[in-house]
Image (cartoon, rainbow, N blue to C red):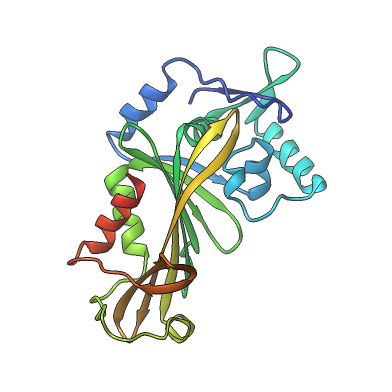
Length: 248
């Protein structure tokens, strides 16, 4: 697809997006998911994509190899001026849409099986579409653009599910999480941008745990943020609706 020129890594400015790129891709997502490929942590770090949401910065040697790999595939080329580079193709689209997002949903799940991601990032866009990043056990990041509702449905299907547990029953949260069949930590963070750097603002956590076939929903105690307490969600779509509210 189209190129996405990007300043050099030392430049604090945001990426320059070709005119018409965003609207063209949004129209394409209206017809179905737009898959943007799979990349390693080092490749994403080399182009400053979702860097603030990665676990750790790769070593300089690993980054240098990633740059060589991207250059060999012509995904990274020299820009029109000496201080610019261009991130091309689907990776360039991923960079452009990541920089437009102002919130991120970061979900990490234990108890996943072979072939499942262990972590999913959702970065909503103003046009009611969503950049989704699925991360597997090898650290491969599968990136795609989806309609917002479709992305959220996929996420909810991946999170622990089951009939809701009794919210008013006494719960030892530490024991619950230790013995749960599947559990997830979902963190929604709203942020602002300064150039290509994201500045985190308000953040909210939600914990989901399936134990003995029942789904427990926990949140941080307003009086003690280190403590998890049962959190009320209503009906079959309660988790879905709660996540929509957190991202609003």
